[in-house]
Amino acid sequence: MKIETHLFRILLLAALAVPFMADAEPQVLVTVGNMQVSADDLNEAMASSPFSTQMTSMNEDDQAGLRGDMLRRLVAARLLALEAQRLGLDKTRAFKQDLENFRLGLLYRFYMDKLRERIVIPADTLAAMKQQFKGDMEGMTAAKAAYVAEQFKVLKLTTMQNMLQNDGIKLYEERIKAGVKADTVLMQGKSFQIKYGDIVDAKEYPSLPNPEWVKEQLYKRGELLLAAKAADKEGVDVTAKLKQYQNERLPAVMMEIQTRKWVPDEKTLRQWFAKHPEVAKIPERRHVGQLVVATRQEAEALRARIVKGESLFTLAGQFSIDPISRNQNGDMGWIAEGRGMPELESALAELEDGKLSEVIETKAGFHLLTVLERKPKGEKTFAEVRDRVRQLIINEKMPPYLGELERRYKVKWHVIQTRDESAPK
Image (tube, rainbow, N blue to C red; front, side, top):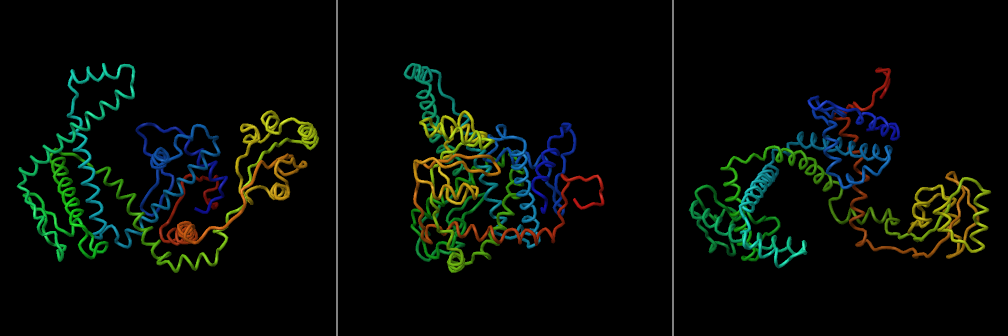
């Protein structure tokens, strides 16, 4: 993953821009040990990412940058999965139970969706709704949803009651009392049984929690198992989704283990914080107006117009060569101290609120600035930045750790191709 960023983005975009035949093999972008990351994997990850809807409005370089970042994340996930497999994490009882719970959840949702599909609003009821909510589409939609929800409750209750009878379910609620053991059976049927340890984690609850809460967990587990059994009986196949979950969950489990190593206790967080007190600093924030042009002569001319009474913001919308400044009519919003170019930072630090700066030259052009208002600097407590400190420690430890995994599991990038195959890629 040690690739020059700009070159990586360009070549990645070029590789992914090549059209593929529908029946062609997916293009392999990276090989990680015995695993692969294909163009299909990347496209699927991009489609499910939070910024997928923004891609069409981005330029090619920004799109390639996002794809490159996502590809590196996928490679990191493969490395973590391989390490988890080496350590046998996928063979542990906890991981297998996690997969089984997910499988049951998939089957349960499928069965409940099928139950809901059976509900049909009678014609006379629908006609009455249309009459009542004539012209009010939102009201009509809400009324239909409320009717389906109410009918679903009734249908679900009767269905579960039938399942309980057919499976010969027996409840032993009287056993939910102080001293109950993990292997104490609380629900027994023909096809399954539920023990206290199946619904209450002894590590989290060393003593008996609220008995009513335990009963609620018992009923939920029983309902889950009955519905999953019914879906299984109908031949519902959740293999693909279960495999996808396994592929996503295994790297997460590996990261949970590493995180506990890197951040084992509160003392670690406080020691790191003591060495990096700057994370608690709140920099001064300035609401900045800006106009940028290509020459000093143009900047001086525009400055003279502003001094005579014209608006920097109106002129920025007309003349600024900076796209953000032009599109936002010069309103750059709130900018934290230290985030700008050194030349601009120096000017902003000395500029009085409401005043116009002199012309400032940077590599981006010639700037005119004004500060509308400021929010003073401050400092947060450890408690306020605790979660950030934890994440910063992880960010600090992650690159060298992934480097170790790269050396353990060979990573081969196929998106980079050179004319001389003997040359380093």
